[in-house]
Length: 286
Image 1 (tube, one colour):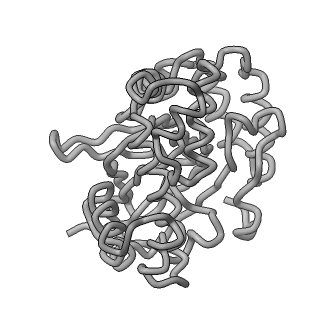
Image 2: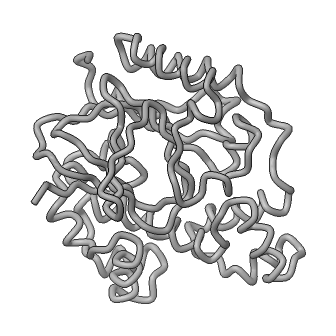
Image 3: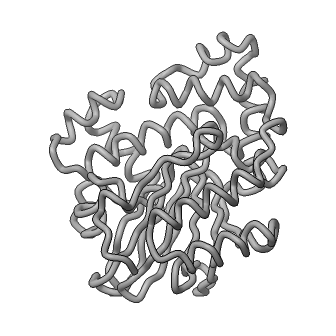
């Protein structure tokens, strides 16, 4: 790996990609206890190109691990478990919910609540991304390679219905604070019709989208460690701190303080934005 600073680990994509792709975030983690990480819900799809070693997702129900060279995980409402031996490297490409149609001609609903190896659905794109990212010696060159591959893959004429796009954007712009009834009014649909169309496209409903977007904003502020929870709750639109705690436990299985107490990675990396895994929380092995 290169010796670049944390300031070099994030970059915005090419302007043409920005309606579909958020920042590229490189991560190079070492020296932490072996265990698992919690991949937390957010308003972005998780798209990760692993470097050196495949990403390992653990499924406790079956006590199995699946390996991913290029992982694409859809919107989800509960945490996922990433197993590691104390070190992980890769690049997270934060996909908007419109990205799967643009790059793979598939709606986001097809990836909701689970992870896929991109090579199983788009082998040429996955193979080139993995090969070029792993061959590049610097983060800048890795990001350049991703730009190049995605620019050649993009089809920006395959988007969802305009009302669905606008509904998502309104919820995202308000950080999950806009009532669904107002969103429906703005696009000229009933709440029932909006819920059906929204869920058919993204795999979650508008109320659930608002919850995870609001939660993700709160999580980022909490991990920076500069604001008391009551203030975070007020800023992010929760009724009170108890409301924040309930939503946090619903989406993570733990409390905000419990998450941070067990997560050295979140505490040290979130302010720079270099490591996120859609809000990854660390848990050491027991």
